[in-house]
Amino acid sequence: MWIWCYLMENIIRFGVSIEPSLLKKFDRIIKKKGYTNRSEALRDLIRKNIVEEESNRDKNMEAVGTLTMVYDHHTGSLANRLLDIQHMHHDLILSTTHVHIDHHNCLEVLMLRGRIGDIQKISDNIKALRGIKHGELVITKTGL
Image (cartoon, rainbow, N blue to C red; front, side):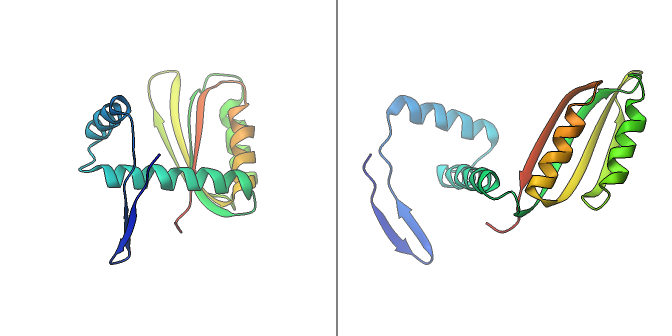
């Protein structure tokens, strides 16, 4: 890979050598996502990688995140167990949003703030509950 760089008003410009077929796929993706240029798409990819790397390395780092889950509220005492867990971890939970999708299914989003290890632990505990159909945790931080 060949890279050239120069500094211009706190911005570093650099060139990247890339196979035409890979660049064509990348351009298709960034156009679909609404990026106006490759630079912003690359910056987002770099930021995402930094957050993931730091999250995996330092479980004591402060972060914010969302746990999005879909569940069947008719499953046993799931709704009560979710509330119990949320009350036990009220210090991590900033807010919750609950939507009734249909007669059986609910969508719930927890907005979390705290140490990454604690956020991941509560997320894992909730996703492991019987009746949770899907759960996904997204962690980010403000200082990049």
